[in-house]
Length: 222
Image (cartoon, rainbow, N blue to C red; front, side):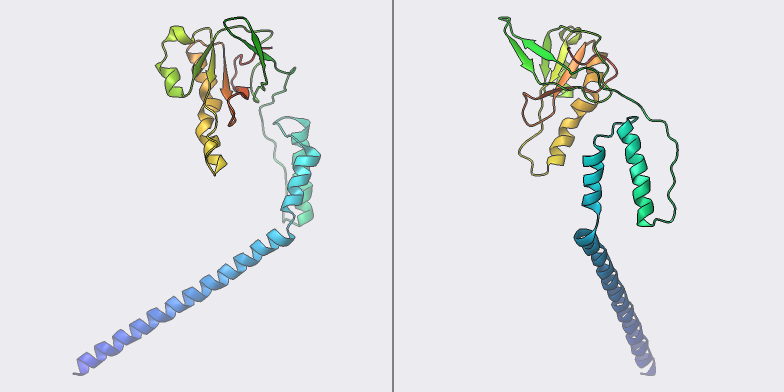
């Protein structure tokens, strides 16, 4: 009987110890949650994030790598962090690609009857100029798989038009952008491997808005 009582006592102590540990952990978690909530409240109600973003994007503007604006942004970031009282702020030299946009891009599509349609186009950063006009037939695809399935003679010497706009039905627009991103990232590269002279892609919910792709080979007509 003593053995049974001893075991019951030890078991009760273990349970009490476990309960005490759980209570302590719950209390610590609550304290952490309150501290995190205070940080959020401070940032959302009295923070400078939106003001900093406004100054960076509105005052300094676009910041293509290697551009004067990119350098201004670096210096602005250093000064801003120093004003915040960060322990140590320093800059490190780094090599970055430098791309300069040339003359405004122009493109015209002509149908079988010779009627022309002027398109609104914009070369993405990294595109190489055409050194004049490029004229070729257009082959339309809606996916990388469609391009891969075409025989070489259907692609060689032509413009490849990736006509797959972002899905406008997604509530989360980032998902739509991501799904359409492969044609922007590598569409022209894959088309070039097949002998195409250039590539366009629809990069918005409306297929009529066409953007040349970003690749180190001719992508646009002038």
